[in-house]
Each structure stands twice: as structure tokens, then as C-alpha cells.
Image 1 (cartoon, rainbow, N blue to C red):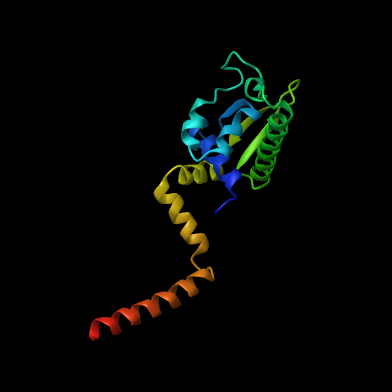
Image 2: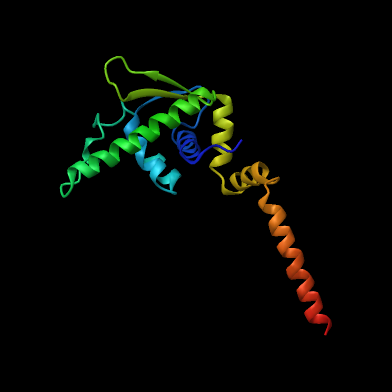
Length: 163
């Protein structure tokens, strides 16, 4: 299954960070913003500490830019919204389970289901991830155009070499 980018990156990050099926781990959800912002999912996911493991309780240290605090806060809220939407979609697809904290609004327990663990493992390897991408798009219409152009180029090369 090929998921949208934010969901794919979050699921890969959860696999790298949690690493077990049905293991509950609590996170401050805005801490996952760097995971969806970059291509280095594994590196950023490994840096994220669980809510009860770290000394800090919120991700406020990276929210505001002193030069333009309004713009940086809007950008931070946009990314936080993307993380929330991706989490909701992953939960609806039954790839993860989320439990809310009793008193903290952004703190949730993330649990990988067996399907989410398997798919996260596949996304964490470049070779299997590219295989998933090919499987999803192997019947795409663009291959018809690429094949047609390849045939024309091939015929031109054969014609050019025969002279």
C-alpha cells in the first residue's frame, strides 16, 4: 500500500522509534513535525524521546522565530495540523492506535498494529519502498507514453546505425 507522504513518513518514524508491535509509547505529538518536514525520517525519528523519557514536556523551543514570530507560529500550526491529519488517517486505516492523555492535549500514546509495523518496516528500507512505489504505479498511463517514446528512439537508433 502506498500512502500519502505525511502518513508514510510518520509511519516509518513510528516504526523506527517504537520498533515493536502493540507497544504503547507516549509522545508530545508536535515533536513529530521534523519527521514530516524532511527526507531524513530515520534520523529525526530516532531523536524523538517519549513524553515520560525526556525532561521537556512541550515542543515550545522551536515554535517561534524571534525575527518573525507570527509567520513562524502560523507555519508551526500548519505543520502540527498536518501531523494531526496524518495520525487520524493512519488510525482510520488501522495502522496505528492513538490514546489521548488525561490532562495534556497534545500528548498521545501511539501503538503500532501488526499491519502498521509491517508497512513501517517496508517504508524504512529504500529497496522495499521503491518496490511498493512500482507496484502501486505499474499500470499508470505515463508508462504508455514512455514506452511509445522509447520505441521511437529505438527505431531512430537502429535506422541511424544501419546507414
